[in-house]
Amino acid sequence: SCHLQFKLPDPLSAALVAPPRHTGKMGKIKFMSQVDMKIGVIGDEDTVTGMLLAGIGAVDGQGKKNFLIVDTKTHQREMEEVFNDLTNRKDIAMVLITQKTIRLAVDGYAASGKVVPTILEIPSKEQPYDPRKDAVFQRVAFFYPQAYAMMGMEEKA
Image (cartoon, rainbow, N blue to C red; front, side):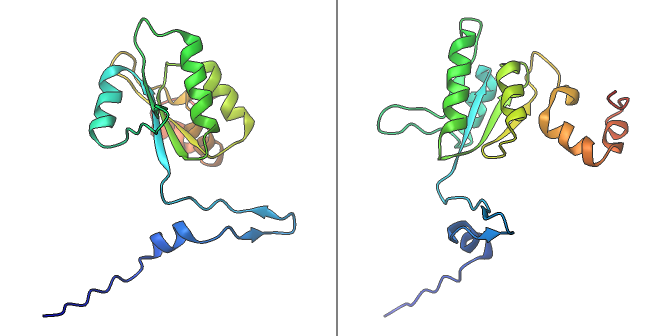
């Protein structure tokens, strides 16, 4: 017997493979993601292990990883190199990083105005999440000042 199978394109898949569109008079290209974009992770062993078990980890043919496990032996320079590598790769759409890890590099990236890859700061077991140091939360609070009150904090001065 012959079976025909049809697969209807879902709108999200179509959007992921659509060519870039020009928007506005300035000729800026609207970002359209690729199908094989990855998520990078920099954090403590438990955080990175959990993300790897969830399927985030990738190692390419040259041994280049999209993750770094940070412990007491990890040098600041190594963390910054991996962070800069992840933020400059074309196949990385998002970088998850434990908040305390490399504050200066994250602040510098946030000040650059880049949005891809997006940097999401997550809490670690050793340190609670501080929204005042999170660039994404700061942007939310800029457009929605009540966000601080909703988090039980005073508005940033």
